[in-house]
Image 1 (cartoon, rainbow, N blue to C red):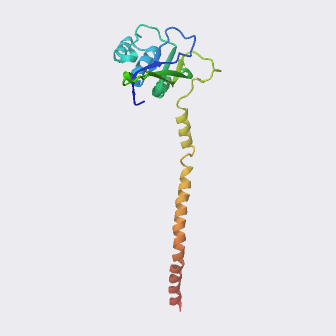
Image 2: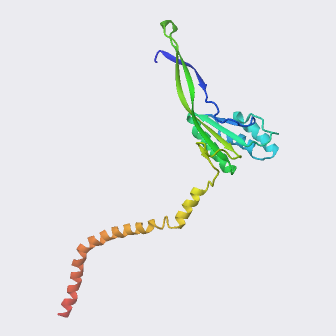
Image 3: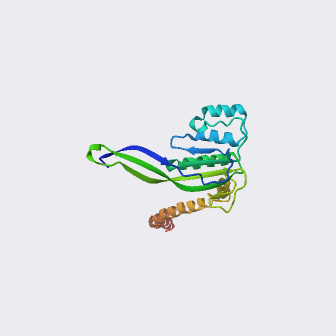
Length: 221
């Protein structure tokens, strides 16, 4: 490919896999340069009841992700996050934060592939080389958050639940002796080390004890 240069890149994203959604369902496209703060501002303004002035301020500061007018619209019951490539983890982070902020949301996740076409042009057209088009698959994710119950039999469904369960389990484990169960072992380990030292002292101990025991014997004699 040393005789070619990349002319352009055409991305063909995957189609939304969720059918039957209302027409006003917001679709948040997460990109590499997107800021999580701006994405969350727009998403929460469409699903969380807030004063209109706060919504207007957030729309002004929202940047590219918040250009859609959300002021005066009713709250949405569904929200879609989508991303591809390196932005997938950022979309997952946004969805998890929204679920923590708005309790009781049902989630449905789909993993698909989009297509990216890279067009390469020859550096010297007179050399008789043709332009090349390289197509590659790009993984993408679609996350649907819904206030209404979804079909739990579908793959990728996650029911609403407690998000502090992990910390609750950790704290109960600590209170029930998670760390206290380790301390005795640690003490035993130190005791074993001390036993090693005492065993080393045993070699010298008898000599000392025998030396001490001889003195009273001499005094008795």
